[in-house]
Length: 198
Image 1 (cartoon, rainbow, N blue to C red):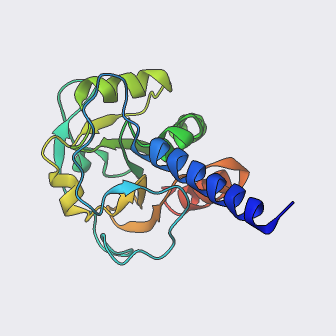
Image 2: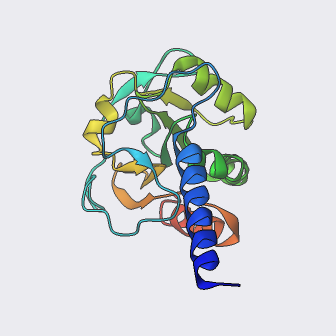
């Protein structure tokens, strides 16, 4: 095989990989408009341990209230006294979809131990698409809609998914950017839940 043929083949493979990557990371649910995202909020496919934006570990989680997918208004203050795993997500985010079933299974494991999971659907989604996402993955833990992006701004959201672990006193004990996937991801998730057990 000639060097030229090898280079052409490698170039074609690289182009195909780039097309697949763009298609996967920008895909929106059927019928949905492409999300209008601030440049900094993008799907994060692997964990980002050091993120300089966002609320810092050891500080008090900022209060908010928002409409709940279960009906009514829900506030973070309503959950005081429980450990809270707060997960920012969107229906069109591939890494959010990748971790969804494992988050639900982990919630079921810890819900009777004083841990509450809270999903926060970001502004660049729609009610309908988010409801479809929650139904598709059988999400039974509470979820709210950040309709105007106020919560994302308060928490200086960097990418999706982002998860905050808040203790029973409302103090942030850990922050994680990226999905919890596979055995290693689940191990990390459970370790961080252990930090907020009441």
